[in-house]
Length: 280
Image (cartoon, rainbow, N blue to C red; front, side, top):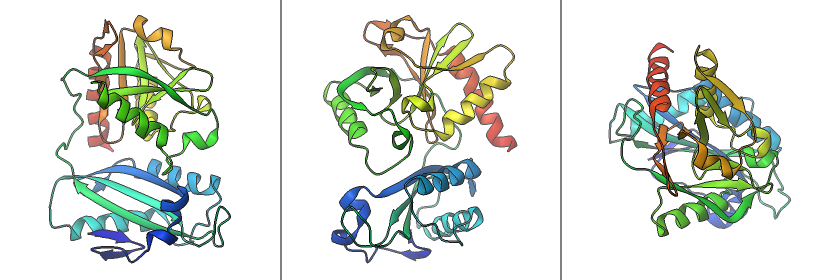
């Protein structure tokens, strides 16, 4: 069951040979978590989605409001046969018209999919989590790299590299050889009371959970956040490294090459993050 343009259906009638998301990666998407019929960080997701569509010059329908999007998500969840307290939801918006690289029509279609998610609160997985640098391809340092688009070949290739070599994830670098993110998450590095994360200007994803964690750090009396370029040489000097995204929340990295890391600050932030969700 999916929500296709506001209609609940078991499958879409769209043909792949005319689907621009499939043919050209002409699509942007959001992945969000729904807990007890509440879309977490809905406003942030909605405005990032709207900004992404505007940046790539999609024509946004007048009725595509935040309230409309929330309604379409909840309609889908109510129609699912598998009920759960938590869901992983993906909203994909793509240009609906024909054309080659130049679209004949810039209006959008959207597709919403959902699946039950087993974790109702965020948990920092205690299992070993080892990462490695991915150096085969770079992420270009520009605005389009900060968007969630359906062109994710660098992340996909890096994820396959990680699996083939026994790592849990890979860290991506930009064309200036600075670390920007993991394959599916933003990255934070801890040294003492200072937490560093790559800036959006370096080409990292403008992550929703990244924003939440930065806000929590700024409200803390004993932690400082720095948004700055991060060199790979800093990894083995770090006390902690942790990853963030909307679905996992916070995931501590336990090992990079010969260096092993603690998880104290990540666990402290996780408590604050779960408290924030309950209060919002």
